[in-house]
Structure formats: structure tokens, C-alpha cells
Length: 84
Image (tube, rainbow, N blue to C red; front, side):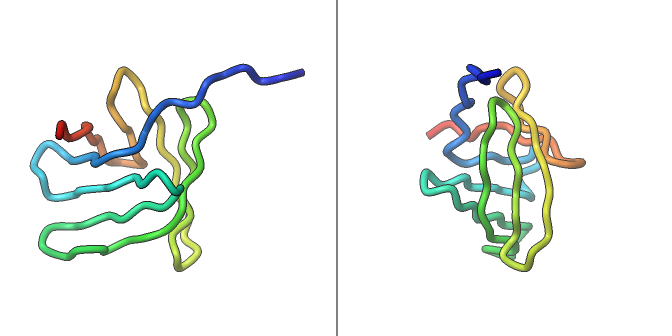
């Protein structure tokens, strides 16, 4: 069986409503997450399958996320795409 699900475009900056957490998903499959004033608090790689994101932090920690209706639900976080 072939999966014909097209991957959602996730590249760009995603931000929590309060702006405290900023997650940049880069086109090369890497991410850089800032927390408060701490830049690059978490960095690692990600893969997208459909609307599902699998994250692997550079330390080996893993997490997941899903994009629904233009909103990124990443574990307990809710992030919105930052407009350029």
C-alpha cells in the first residue's frame, strides 16, 4: 500500500501565544528552539510525514508534533506560524 499523503509545509518560525517559545523549522530538516531569553535552548533534526512531525534533539531526546488547521501542536505546546 502506498501513502499518497502530501507533507505539510512546516518550514518557518513557530511561536507560542506569549512569544516565550520560538521554534524555527529550517528547510534542511533541522530545528532551533529558543526559550525566553535562552537562544538555541534546543536544537536537533525533524522529519515530516503528512501533518506529523518527529523531532530528535541533538542530545537524543525525542518528541512529536502535529499540524492541524495551521496550528502546530508540539507535545504540550501550541504554536502559531509567525508571519514574515
